[in-house]
Length: 414
Image (cartoon, rainbow, N blue to C red):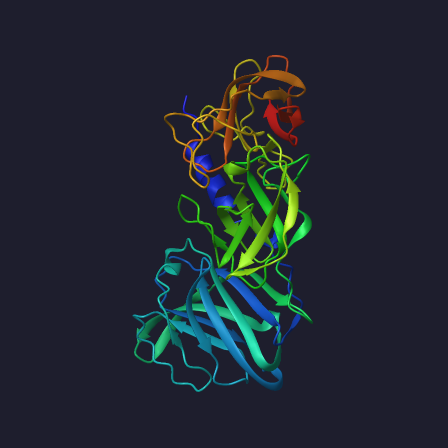
């Protein structure tokens, strides 16, 4: 039996890279007042349509105070593509053209910025526009902001391809800029969203806090990077590899090198400027099981031996089905990979001691426990559903290691 489900693992990886932005940014008010200490942050996805023009504008006139200068910065997965400063303050109008665009803008509202956004046309990256204002302030209605992607059809015209898929529109900042900081109790197991007695080195953690005005970015390769969108996290002089970073949430791996310590302090740094650190406890193990709703409860990220989700449409059979439980925080392993690097398929990285698994309160036989090959910090536990497990659409599953219980998730049994 293979020790990983390829299709599920890919979905898990994508979900970890692109954590829900609703947890990272607060919803925007209806009227936005953008001043010298605030920014408008818009994230979007672009279809695979080879657009050569991106257009963001407000359908209503701006209300201004002072002599505001309006600047937009376009990002691709946290990487700056280009900057545009408006030449007028009548309305919001940001136009970015590809390097190959044939469009010739004839109006007087703005001058398009030429940038290479070919990577956005793949339809897989997360684009982001940050609008900042200096020298005054502007007021605009978020409901009147329109976004288009376009294609040049002649030297002086373009055809809109349709509205961009805008996933988040938020205002950051306030009367004073937010300090770079980690929330109290904001360092948690990425699967269970709990800290318990501590977090295990090598595991995946989610960190919540105020990480200033950055665009969401996810790791695109392994080994994992130690910086995304200019943000990094350091503990005990060790850089933590990052899966994902946004203005309010970071997903990272706790370095293996912290094994044996009882606590450490995690410090966020943005573009070389360190923020306030947060001390948290470490433990040999802190098991957590991933759930499909990314909330640490409900349907577990648990597959059968054919790599199908064990839910009500595919219930497991007690005494027969072997399930694959995906989680994190099971502690030290043999053949430990370097921090930030994926586990190998040969040799396997196994936990020296197998955890205890209960399904519907009945102990299950554990066949394998270790890191899922090809992934960073992701553990896999293979167990046979015991014959005495009760039937039902939401049967509880718990993994215990070193006397520490995981969160409870569910599977379906027939």
